[in-house]
Structures are given as C-alpha cells and as structure tokens.
Image 1 (cartoon, one colour):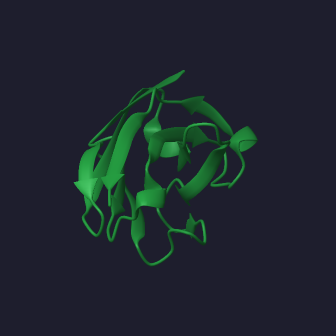
Image 2 (cartoon, rainbow, N blue to C red):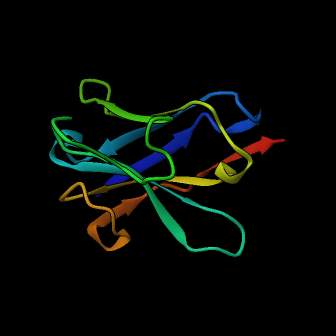
Amino acid sequence: QVQLVESGGGLVQAGGSLRLSCAASGRAFSMYAMGWFRQAPGKERDFVAAISWNAGRTYYADSVKGRFTISRDNAKNTVYLQMNSLKPEDMAVYYCAAGRVAGTSRAEYDYWGQGTQVTVSS
C-alpha cells in the first residue's frame, strides 16, 4: 500500500504560479512511477504529467507543456508539480497517483491521493 497526500493548492491569479507537492508513505516510493491528474467540475479526470521511478522520463499533456514541470525527490518520498503561467482553464482538483509505469491513463495507476484544489482567477 502507498498513501499519498497532496498539498500546495490554493487561489492564484491568471499568470501566476503554484507548486503542488505529493508526499508518499508506505511501500518504497522509488519503486513507483508517479503521475498528476486533474478534474474540473463536470469533467473527466484528465492526465497532466507523469514521471518515471528514477525521473529519467517525463510526460506532459499538450495543454500544459512548457508551463508545468513534474519532478520527484526519492529521498523525501515526494513528487512535485510546478505550475507556471496558470490559466483559468487550469482550475481543477489536482490528484497525484502512483503506478507501475509512467502512463497517461488513469488505469495505469494503483494508488491515488485525495486531491488539492487549484483555483485560478481571471
């Protein structure tokens, strides 16, 4: 079992930045690929970014490329999502997830956090 707790969400103006953190506990964090997903009201939970177990590979949704950066610190059991140039359409609940591969599908992740709200004002 892996327990995931997100933090760092909040209210920010369009064009601003936030850094989300996801702290993991339980089984060896470094064994897992990590992903970030987001879900806006009335919409599906969509892929945002993913990172392999050793940070050797990263993947991004087209909508966030060049603005968001995923990273991890295996010594701290934490994965981060640095979000810059935020837009109102980025507003959603952001979830981190742990899985066997750094995929873009929800089905590839076995463990999920409870989410953190990101609100972007225009």
